[in-house]
Each structure stands twice: as structure tokens, then as C-alpha cells.
Amino acid sequence: MNRVYLDYNATAPLRPEARDAMIAAMDVCGNPSSVHAEGRAAKALVERARAQIAAAFGADGADIVFTSGSTEGAALTLAGRGIHGAAVEHDAVRSWTVEDLSVSQSGRVQILEPENSTLQLANSETGIIQPLPKGLAVTDATQAFGKLPVAFNWMDVQMALISAHKLGGPKGIGAVVMKRGTDLPAQIKGGGQEMGRRSGTENVVGITGFGAAAEAAAKDLANGVWEQVAEFRNILEKALEAGSKSTIFVGKDQDRLPNTLCFATPGWKGETQVMQMDLSGFAISAGSACSSGKVRASAVLTAMGYDEVTAASAIRVSLGPRTSEEDVLRFAETWLEKEKKHRARAA
Image (tube, rainbow, N blue to C red; front, side):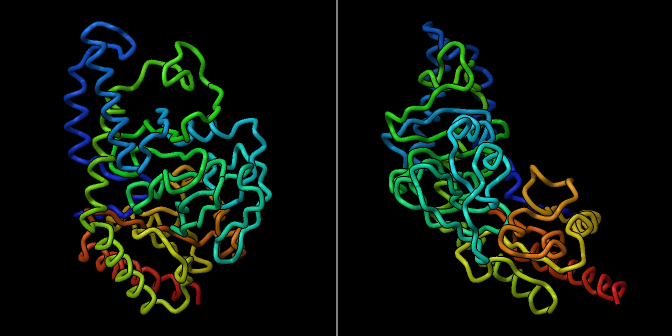
């Protein structure tokens, strides 16, 4: 069976550029904090990656603090600050916010105090893109970075969260990007690495892979790769819509990530669909990867006003640069066959 991977929003396949950079970095034995030649060589790799990420994210002149990923970044930027958030945020962000921001049926969040609020740039489940207000405290740009032509310096936000594995880098490495001079007390204290904001010996191999992946992702954007991905996503959406009249397509009329399709067939549980499609050779998800496997309705769809049955019936298909038109047409054919059988059983 030739499997088709359609879960890029959970994690993207490792880019060859990142793999090659990481293998080379494994031969550099020095600690980046050491002053000898070996230490300076390791430090050079870290700083080169920092520059690559800054260039790809349009963050020249900003501070980039490496973390283990966006989950740690959320704790670092949000813990203990009483920041306002919404139920459509990722659980890593929701864990640290005062959840009192309203969400419209279109998935848009209303911000009243930007300087005391957090707002995702793009939703991981629906792909819906949010317009960021000026002066926003924190934005989770994890899903948008590498898929959208965004620049931190244009956003007018204090801090942004990004993660390597969403754009083809290694898992377990991310960063907080912040305006220079931003006050950010350390959560992990020790040797004072990362400008005193995140102590601990740097993950040189992971950081190097992150930098290489960010550089490659920027080239994909410039070369129109994601426009092709969006075309395949639209082909898939039209095929499913034509074959299933009972299916709801979330965010269809909203600005979305070019690769993301979220849809629900009320009464057909999302986790059931995920298992059935997995057995047929397709990797998809029933929500964000961090909450998959937990049998519950999507908090994102519930916040948008969908009922519990519909919210529990949603699945997410997320494409990437390696996805072909044949892949999406095969998926549509297979899914529609299973949807037809589901309707027959439910009748």
C-alpha cells in the first residue's frame, strides 16, 4: 500500500536541507558557551541558524530565543501575565490565558486590549487566518510560518511563537521572536544562555536543522510552491463537496492557510474517520495533533458555535509541498466511498 501523508499541520516531513545540516552539525563537538575553537564553531552554527530564521520570518533586528518548541514558548511568554485569549487558540496557549475573548461564527476573535491579549495568526484545525491588531502582546505564528508570506517586522506585535517541525525542521526545537528590548523574565534559569531568557546548553543540532528548514521554506514561498498546494486543496474541497451534500466545510469563505481543509459530517465521529482512512493508507487527523486521541468535540468548532455532534465529527486534512493532485483525488474517492457506507448504515 502506498501511503499518502495529509497531516502536515501536525508535523511536516523533514526537509533534506535540514537533515544534511543536522548530520554535519553532529560532528561539531564544542559547547556554544565555550571560548575555545570547538566552542566557537558550535556557536557559529547557532548564530547562523538565528540569522536564517530571522531572514525567513522577516525579523531582522528582533531577538530570537530558542526553545524546545511553541509549547515552551507559550509558557515563557504567557505564564503569570493574565493575558486575554480565546477558545480557538492551541491548548499550549489556552493553558496560560484568561479565556474571555469572543469568537464569531466565522472563527474571528474580537480583541479589545491588544497589549494584554494573545491571538493566533492561523488556526491549526480550520486554517482560518486572523487579522492581528496593532500592539498585540503575543501571537502564535506556528502554523503560519513557512506557509504564508509573513514578516514579524510588519506585524507590530511584541512576541511571536514559531516551531521547526511545522515547516520541515526537526521536532523539539522552536523559538520566541520578540521586539528588541522586550522584557521577558526567564522561566528556565541557570547559565544564562539565550540572552539570559532561556538557560541550558543550546540544542545545536536541532537549531541548525531549524535554520536550514526555515531557509528552504522561504525559497518555497518565493517560488510559488504554496500556491500549487492551495490549488490541490481546492480541488479536494470541490470533489468532496460535489460528492457529499451533508458535509460542512469549516471556514470555506474565510482566508485560510493554503493547505488546510476542515470538514464535518454530523454523526460520523472524527476519530472513526481517522482510523478508517488510516487503514486505507491516508494519514489525517481529527484536530490538533496534541489533542488527537482524546475523544472529545473540537473546542475550536464549539467556540465557533457548532453543536457538539458536528464538532465531534470534524476532521482535518492538511497538504504540503510533496502532495500531488493524484494524492488528493485518491483521498476524495476513498473518503466518499466510506461516507456513502456511513450514510447507508445510519439510514
